Length: 96
Image (cartoon, helix red, strand yellow):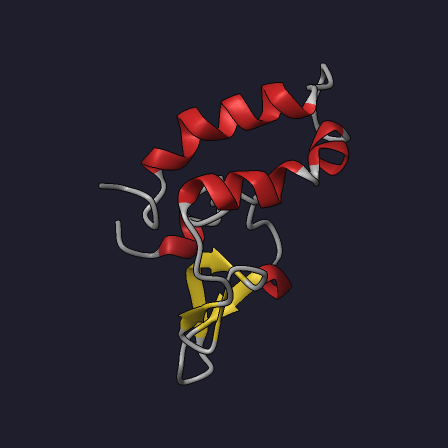
């Protein structure tokens, strides 16, 4: 199945953010929608920040309160970072 829009759930392959609405997808150099990345990570065919995976985890950890709104049990910032350290290596941008 190649139609990425039908694969649910879809997550940004850089930061792990759920891609649930059309307006959060990134854009390719030609202005078309990029279904792999969110608009906060990827616009106009390039990443908005050049960083390491650990730097991305540090950046994302500041949004733990937002993430906790969707969680049955709230996480601490350290728990969230540990979860990202396990999850991020599976994302397209960070795969070795």
